[in-house]
Length: 267
Image 1 (tube, helix red, strand yellow):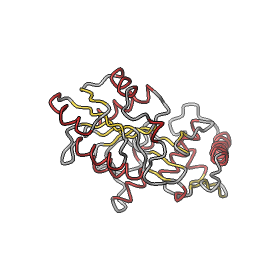
Image 2 (cartoon, helix red, strand yellow):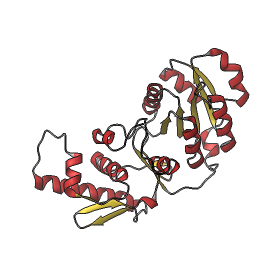
Image 3 (tube, helix red, strand yellow):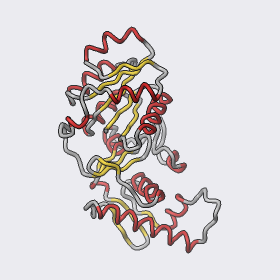
Image 4 (cartoon, helix red, strand yellow):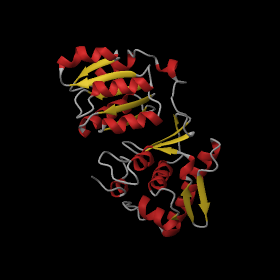
Protein backbone atom coordinates (compact mmCIF):
# COMPACT_ATOMS: atom_id res chain seq x y z
CA UNK A 1 0.00 0.00 0.00
CA UNK A 2 1.41 3.38 -1.04
CA UNK A 3 0.70 6.04 1.60
CA UNK A 4 1.62 9.72 1.81
CA UNK A 5 1.41 11.85 4.97
CA UNK A 6 1.31 15.63 4.53
CA UNK A 7 1.42 18.04 7.47
CA UNK A 8 3.35 21.28 7.92
CA UNK A 9 4.53 20.10 11.34
CA UNK A 10 7.29 17.53 11.11
CA UNK A 11 6.59 16.02 14.54
CA UNK A 12 3.09 15.06 13.45
CA UNK A 13 4.40 13.61 10.19
CA UNK A 14 6.91 11.50 12.11
CA UNK A 15 4.25 10.31 14.54
CA UNK A 16 1.94 9.13 11.77
CA UNK A 17 4.77 7.43 9.90
CA UNK A 18 5.73 5.52 13.05
CA UNK A 19 2.13 4.45 13.59
CA UNK A 20 1.79 3.25 10.00
CA UNK A 21 5.04 1.28 10.13
CA UNK A 22 3.90 -0.24 13.42
CA UNK A 23 0.65 -1.39 11.81
CA UNK A 24 2.35 -2.93 8.76
CA UNK A 25 6.07 -2.61 8.01
CA UNK A 26 5.44 -3.40 4.33
CA UNK A 27 3.55 -0.14 3.77
CA UNK A 28 5.37 2.19 1.41
CA UNK A 29 5.14 5.44 3.36
CA UNK A 30 6.48 8.92 2.69
CA UNK A 31 6.00 12.07 4.75
CA UNK A 32 6.18 15.67 3.55
CA UNK A 33 5.77 19.18 5.00
CA UNK A 34 5.17 21.02 1.73
CA UNK A 35 1.83 20.43 -0.07
CA UNK A 36 3.26 21.56 -3.41
CA UNK A 37 6.10 19.04 -3.13
CA UNK A 38 3.59 16.38 -2.13
CA UNK A 39 1.58 17.10 -5.26
CA UNK A 40 4.69 16.89 -7.42
CA UNK A 41 5.64 13.61 -5.76
CA UNK A 42 2.17 12.22 -6.53
CA UNK A 43 2.58 13.01 -10.21
CA UNK A 44 5.43 10.50 -10.40
CA UNK A 45 4.52 7.95 -7.71
CA UNK A 46 1.26 5.97 -7.43
CA UNK A 47 -0.72 6.51 -4.23
CA UNK A 48 -3.40 4.49 -2.46
CA UNK A 49 -3.96 6.56 0.71
CA UNK A 50 -3.24 10.19 1.66
CA UNK A 51 -3.30 11.45 5.26
CA UNK A 52 -3.70 15.23 4.94
CA UNK A 53 -3.67 18.02 7.50
CA UNK A 54 -6.37 20.62 6.83
CA UNK A 55 -4.39 23.81 7.56
CA UNK A 56 -1.17 24.07 5.56
CA UNK A 57 -0.37 27.54 4.31
CA UNK A 58 -1.34 28.67 0.79
CA UNK A 59 -2.41 25.17 -0.34
CA UNK A 60 -4.58 23.68 2.40
CA UNK A 61 -5.51 20.05 2.85
CA UNK A 62 -8.87 20.36 1.10
CA UNK A 63 -7.34 21.96 -1.99
CA UNK A 64 -4.53 19.41 -2.03
CA UNK A 65 -7.08 16.59 -1.77
CA UNK A 66 -8.93 17.91 -4.84
CA UNK A 67 -5.72 18.08 -6.86
CA UNK A 68 -4.63 14.59 -5.76
CA UNK A 69 -7.97 13.06 -6.68
CA UNK A 70 -7.66 14.59 -10.14
CA UNK A 71 -4.57 12.40 -10.53
CA UNK A 72 -6.11 9.40 -8.74
CA UNK A 73 -9.93 9.45 -8.78
CA UNK A 74 -10.04 6.51 -6.34
CA UNK A 75 -7.43 7.81 -3.92
CA UNK A 76 -8.42 7.28 -0.28
CA UNK A 77 -8.23 10.66 1.46
CA UNK A 78 -8.01 10.70 5.26
CA UNK A 79 -8.06 14.16 6.80
CA UNK A 80 -6.17 14.71 10.04
CA UNK A 81 -6.94 17.92 11.93
CA UNK A 82 -7.50 19.46 15.32
CA UNK A 83 -10.67 21.24 14.19
CA UNK A 84 -14.08 19.57 14.08
CA UNK A 85 -15.62 22.48 12.18
CA UNK A 86 -13.86 21.47 8.92
CA UNK A 87 -15.73 18.17 8.75
CA UNK A 88 -18.57 19.37 6.49
CA UNK A 89 -16.16 20.97 4.01
CA UNK A 90 -14.02 17.83 3.98
CA UNK A 91 -16.88 15.59 2.95
CA UNK A 92 -17.16 17.49 -0.31
CA UNK A 93 -14.26 15.39 -1.62
CA UNK A 94 -15.73 12.13 -0.25
CA UNK A 95 -12.89 11.20 2.11
CA UNK A 96 -12.33 7.76 3.59
CA UNK A 97 -11.87 9.22 7.05
CA UNK A 98 -11.65 12.30 9.24
CA UNK A 99 -9.34 11.95 12.25
CA UNK A 100 -9.02 14.45 15.08
CA UNK A 101 -5.63 15.16 16.63
CA UNK A 102 -4.03 13.71 18.63
CA UNK A 103 -4.31 10.60 16.46
CA UNK A 104 -3.94 7.14 18.00
CA UNK A 105 -2.92 3.84 16.41
CA UNK A 106 -6.50 2.64 16.92
CA UNK A 107 -7.81 5.61 14.91
CA UNK A 108 -5.44 4.87 12.03
CA UNK A 109 -6.21 1.14 12.03
CA UNK A 110 -9.94 1.82 11.87
CA UNK A 111 -9.49 4.32 9.04
CA UNK A 112 -7.39 1.88 7.01
CA UNK A 113 -9.86 -0.94 7.57
CA UNK A 114 -12.73 1.18 6.21
CA UNK A 115 -11.26 2.63 3.03
CA UNK A 116 -13.76 3.90 0.50
CA UNK A 117 -11.78 2.36 -2.35
CA UNK A 118 -10.17 -1.04 -1.61
CA UNK A 119 -6.53 -0.83 -2.66
CA UNK A 120 -6.68 -4.03 -4.70
CA UNK A 121 -9.16 -2.42 -7.10
CA UNK A 122 -6.84 0.37 -8.19
CA UNK A 123 -3.44 -1.24 -8.65
CA UNK A 124 -3.39 -0.47 -12.38
CA UNK A 125 -4.38 3.18 -12.13
CA UNK A 126 -0.96 4.80 -11.77
CA UNK A 127 -0.85 7.79 -14.14
CA UNK A 128 2.75 7.44 -15.13
CA UNK A 129 4.96 4.44 -15.67
CA UNK A 130 8.26 4.73 -13.83
CA UNK A 131 11.29 2.50 -13.53
CA UNK A 132 11.08 -0.90 -11.84
CA UNK A 133 13.34 0.20 -8.98
CA UNK A 134 12.30 3.10 -6.78
CA UNK A 135 14.26 4.54 -3.86
CA UNK A 136 12.75 6.49 -0.96
CA UNK A 137 15.12 8.83 0.92
CA UNK A 138 12.60 11.10 2.64
CA UNK A 139 11.69 9.62 6.02
CA UNK A 140 12.71 5.98 6.41
CA UNK A 141 15.05 4.73 3.69
CA UNK A 142 13.39 2.07 1.54
CA UNK A 143 14.02 0.41 -1.81
CA UNK A 144 11.13 -0.94 -3.86
CA UNK A 145 11.12 -3.22 -6.88
CA UNK A 146 7.87 -3.43 -8.84
CA UNK A 147 6.14 -1.71 -5.92
CA UNK A 148 7.31 -4.21 -3.28
CA UNK A 149 10.08 -3.73 -0.68
CA UNK A 150 13.43 -5.07 -1.84
CA UNK A 151 14.91 -7.32 0.85
CA UNK A 152 18.67 -7.43 1.36
CA UNK A 153 20.31 -10.37 3.12
CA UNK A 154 22.20 -8.06 5.50
CA UNK A 155 21.05 -4.81 7.11
CA UNK A 156 24.47 -3.28 6.34
CA UNK A 157 23.89 -4.04 2.65
CA UNK A 158 20.84 -1.81 2.72
CA UNK A 159 22.83 0.89 4.52
CA UNK A 160 25.58 0.70 1.91
CA UNK A 161 23.00 0.99 -0.85
CA UNK A 162 21.61 4.08 0.89
CA UNK A 163 25.06 5.66 0.99
CA UNK A 164 25.64 4.91 -2.69
CA UNK A 165 22.32 6.58 -3.49
CA UNK A 166 23.44 9.66 -1.52
CA UNK A 167 26.67 10.09 -3.48
CA UNK A 168 24.63 10.06 -6.71
CA UNK A 169 26.73 7.86 -8.94
CA UNK A 170 30.19 8.64 -7.57
CA UNK A 171 32.60 5.70 -7.23
CA UNK A 172 33.30 4.82 -3.60
CA UNK A 173 36.31 2.76 -2.54
CA UNK A 174 36.48 0.12 0.18
CA UNK A 175 38.24 2.42 2.64
CA UNK A 176 35.50 5.03 2.40
CA UNK A 177 32.78 2.41 2.79
CA UNK A 178 34.51 1.10 5.91
CA UNK A 179 34.86 4.56 7.45
CA UNK A 180 31.18 5.36 6.89
CA UNK A 181 29.57 2.08 7.89
CA UNK A 182 31.81 1.27 10.86
CA UNK A 183 32.68 4.74 12.18
CA UNK A 184 30.74 4.13 15.41
CA UNK A 185 31.75 0.51 15.87
CA UNK A 186 33.07 -0.48 19.31
CA UNK A 187 34.29 -3.89 18.13
CA UNK A 188 37.32 -2.38 16.38
CA UNK A 189 37.62 -5.07 13.66
CA UNK A 190 40.86 -5.39 11.75
CA UNK A 191 41.40 -3.72 8.40
CA UNK A 192 41.42 -7.11 6.70
CA UNK A 193 38.15 -8.10 8.36
CA UNK A 194 36.47 -4.85 7.38
CA UNK A 195 37.65 -5.21 3.78
CA UNK A 196 36.16 -8.70 3.68
CA UNK A 197 32.87 -7.48 5.15
CA UNK A 198 32.66 -4.67 2.60
CA UNK A 199 33.14 -7.10 -0.26
CA UNK A 200 30.43 -9.34 1.19
CA UNK A 201 28.04 -6.40 1.32
CA UNK A 202 28.77 -5.49 -2.28
CA UNK A 203 28.23 -9.10 -3.33
CA UNK A 204 24.95 -9.19 -1.43
CA UNK A 205 23.70 -6.04 -3.17
CA UNK A 206 24.75 -7.41 -6.53
CA UNK A 207 22.97 -10.74 -6.00
CA UNK A 208 19.83 -9.06 -4.65
CA UNK A 209 19.61 -6.89 -7.76
CA UNK A 210 20.49 -9.71 -10.15
CA UNK A 211 17.77 -11.91 -8.67
CA UNK A 212 15.29 -9.23 -9.77
CA UNK A 213 16.82 -8.89 -13.24
CA UNK A 214 18.42 -5.52 -12.39
CA UNK A 215 21.95 -6.29 -13.44
CA UNK A 216 22.72 -2.76 -14.66
CA UNK A 217 22.18 -0.90 -11.36
CA UNK A 218 25.41 -1.75 -9.49
CA UNK A 219 28.73 -0.86 -11.11
CA UNK A 220 31.72 -2.75 -9.72
CA UNK A 221 35.23 -1.56 -10.49
CA UNK A 222 38.65 -2.37 -9.06
CA UNK A 223 38.34 -1.72 -5.32
CA UNK A 224 35.36 0.60 -5.79
CA UNK A 225 31.64 0.54 -6.45
CA UNK A 226 28.92 2.95 -7.64
CA UNK A 227 25.30 3.01 -8.82
CA UNK A 228 23.85 3.66 -12.24
CA UNK A 229 21.50 6.43 -11.11
CA UNK A 230 19.62 6.46 -14.42
CA UNK A 231 18.39 2.94 -13.66
CA UNK A 232 16.04 3.86 -10.80
CA UNK A 233 13.66 6.54 -9.55
CA UNK A 234 14.42 8.41 -6.32
CA UNK A 235 12.33 10.96 -4.43
CA UNK A 236 15.42 12.99 -3.45
CA UNK A 237 16.72 13.07 -7.04
CA UNK A 238 13.29 14.32 -8.14
CA UNK A 239 13.47 17.01 -5.44
CA UNK A 240 16.89 18.13 -6.70
CA UNK A 241 15.68 18.26 -10.29
CA UNK A 242 12.60 20.29 -9.38
CA UNK A 243 14.78 22.75 -7.48
CA UNK A 244 17.32 23.13 -10.32
CA UNK A 245 20.18 21.27 -8.66
CA UNK A 246 19.61 22.51 -5.11
CA UNK A 247 20.38 19.63 -2.71
CA UNK A 248 18.82 21.26 0.37
CA UNK A 249 15.93 19.63 2.21
CA UNK A 250 14.56 20.47 5.65
CA UNK A 251 12.57 17.33 6.52
CA UNK A 252 13.61 13.85 7.65
CA UNK A 253 16.23 12.34 5.37
CA UNK A 254 17.22 8.64 5.53
CA UNK A 255 16.21 8.23 9.15
CA UNK A 256 18.25 5.71 11.15
CA UNK A 257 21.74 6.20 9.70
CA UNK A 258 23.90 8.67 11.63
CA UNK A 259 25.97 9.69 8.61
CA UNK A 260 22.87 10.76 6.64
CA UNK A 261 22.35 14.03 8.54
CA UNK A 262 25.64 15.32 7.15
CA UNK A 263 24.90 14.40 3.52
CA UNK A 264 22.63 17.32 2.62
CA UNK A 265 22.47 21.03 3.49
CA UNK A 266 19.41 22.32 5.32
CA UNK A 267 17.27 25.36 4.57
